[in-house]
Length: 238
Ligand SMILES: [Zn+2]
Image (cartoon, rainbow, N blue to C red; front, side):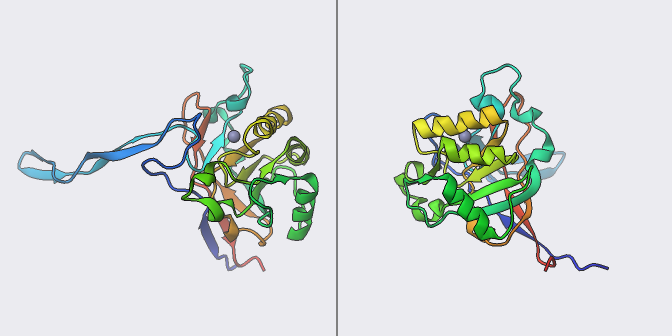
């Protein structure tokens, strides 16, 4: 029997009270709703349970954008309409950690990073972009603003590879303003999407293709959803 050793790598950011969110998305509130101090009794059986109250936007922490987030056409899919296959796919992580914060990622940056993997980007892949942004800024205000970003040209280069989606650690794929809008419009026009707010990408860089899983919640009409992003590594591969 073949020896398969699967390792699961958590690629998700945390959701917590007041966790960083962009100003055009609702804040996160997370608080105790009921504690074990509250004991109920029925027919002589005592029982207590704890539960919390959570409010958040769909675009909180690690999340996927549904096409209807950036495409106003009536037929743009909402998150509950997106095929599950889009969230369980082969993935490749490109190393862009040498890029300085607030810089643009060019087509040649992506080409070089692809070459460095020793593999090629295949149609249908999920492409993760490791920019060491999380490690350099998380916990400071610059997490929301100071990250390397894609441009219209580099996002187009990814889209023309017919990838399923790409993922970044920042909460936006392009530098704030024009670039970020243009990257979203490239996704609309070339029919792919992206995930934002990923973490621990250093754990999947330099390992070639692996299996990615990151299912969204089934939010009716949702423009996006938090995901639990996980890399599945097959250690018995080589
Ligand atoms: Zn987005």
